Amino acid sequence: MKESTRKLLVEVAMVILLGIPAVWALVPPGFFFTHDVIHVARIFAMDKILLTDLQMPPRWVDLFRYGEPTFSFYAPLPYIFGAFIHRMGLTFLDTTKLLFGLGILFSGVSMYLFAKDFFGKKGGYIAAVLYMYAPYHAVDVYVRGALSESWALVFFPLIFWTSYNCFTKKSYLWFLGTVFSLAGLFLTHNIMTLLFTPFLFVFWMLLFFQSKQKLAFMKKASLSFLLSFLISSFFLLPAFIEKSFVQNTLLTGQYFDFRGHFVGIGQFFRSSWGYGGSVWGPEDGFSLQLGNMHILLGGVSFLVALLSFRKQKKRFFLLITFAAFFLVSLFMQHNKSTPIWLRIELLSFVQFPWRFLGLSIFFLSFLAGSVVYIPLPRKVWLGVFLLILTVTIIVNTWYFHPERREAVSDEDYVSSRVLSQEKNLPKDYLPIWVKRIPGERIEKPFAIEGTKITSKLDEFMSTRYVYTVEATASSNVVFPVTYFPGWEASVNSRTVPTQPSSETGLVELTLPEGVSRVDVTFTETPIRILGDVATIIGLMFCALLRKKYEKYFAS
Image 1: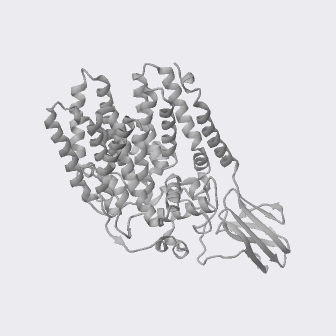
Image 2: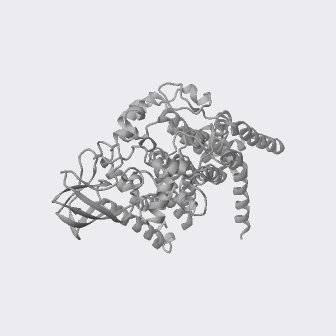
Image 3: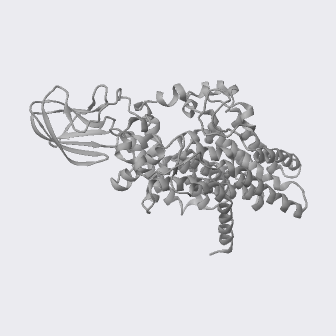
């Protein structure tokens, strides 16, 4: 092992060690209550459809009601990780806790790697600790239970780090890192991708103007973004183009209307800690503060920028850019930004403007790392450095604990009994054809005209149901599978059209009199096939580009 690699591993280990107090509350047995607990069921569902049913790419979850296209619209990457972790022997509850913990620790590691390139080791440690211990990070994990959003925080600094090195160095590995870190964010959280991308483009513009090889820069930037989009296309294309097939109004209406969730300026600086919900006005049930140490060191970074103006122009513009990013992210959370929210329709899917806090703590924590450039005697700086880390960890660790723990098991979260209860399932991605959810569970096919039928389920998995059905007369028969584009049926090996039944939105098809073998299968639509092919092309291009990388990007 190279000496440089060994040193880097030691530094990463130190970051993880510094983050242990933030995740320690995840260690005790049992599980903790948060606003959102459906992530446990999603990991359970991903384990079944991906690793048992071998559904690739994972889209259709048969365990929720009569089946829903959950992972065609909800970014799947954290749950894919969770499925593989579970197969290592962990329960679904322990898997969920481990994912939360890894999200916090990995975010610190990625921030350290990014900030170290600009501020050295001490600046990297300061930025990493502030990022991990930001109060909003604790809100995401211990209050909201926002698994995917907390994992998105891992990718923010990782993308900035890999792209910075990609544009300033010639290594193919940095280019690959940019492509896959971007794809990782695309596949982790739709909304945070939407909020993050404009800031990334501005950061790239700053690097472009500083670059001496502008043609090579433009090639790398355009191709890395294109390839990351292609690799993620199996998810992105259906999620965007087929979104009209699910009940989008449930995602943006009533409680989820963004106008009811702006942040008052005072809440950034002081708001009481709690485990309640987001409400209209400044009396939210949980804290939206930035953190005292974060604000203090962010302010000091402004002084560093002024000191850098004459002799360190690049550092000055970097700090001013991140300060501007930070202020924009705060502005977007205040009700004065309402005209922007109303003009950009996609922003309505953000639901909660305070989600910009994930970006605010990223920008502010990075700025905090620059305080190492304050001119102080070396021995004094060592004491200040240790004081910053110690005070941040001691003061902010208090936020990193759940409201209460429950002595529960997997059965309490993912059993058929629990998943059959309507109150335990969100309606975010219900197909538009579902007008009414049956009060009593439908277990077998039934004829809507009153014709008597008998049926037997011969084969089943998440994307295929094979029945033997005997009907006393030709009739329309409803099967206990939610209709959605892609469901196809054959009767006695002959393809027949499917349609949604009225009200319930279940698959309906016409059967002849007598005994029929009915095969109902979920298939890829043209846009899903296009996304799948684009993903394969993106991966192949990454592999083929390796040998010609330096020649292609020569300016």
